[in-house]
Image (cartoon, rainbow, N blue to C red; front, side, top):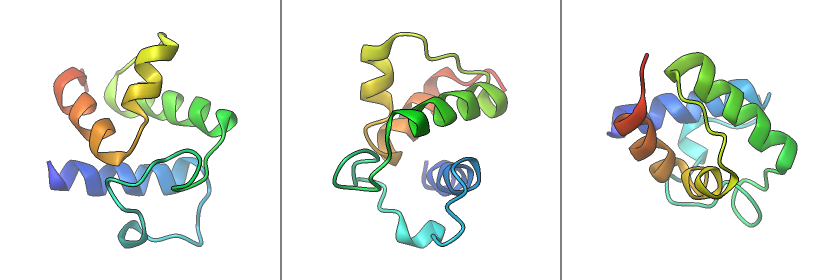
Length: 85
């Protein structure tokens, strides 16, 4: 699971053009939105597109998406269970 978390952190940095950040700077348990990375709703759309492109996951339910995108750990757990790629 840790390897998947590292991969997701790298993909988040790439998808959101966070070149000033490194994988090591992203805490797996820190919130992605608000106090943590400070992402916004546009960023959430980018992450949803990234999940579809790399893992074949389509997040269409806003309630589920909010839970899945809470932090890197919840994202990794969801990808691990639902990936088709």
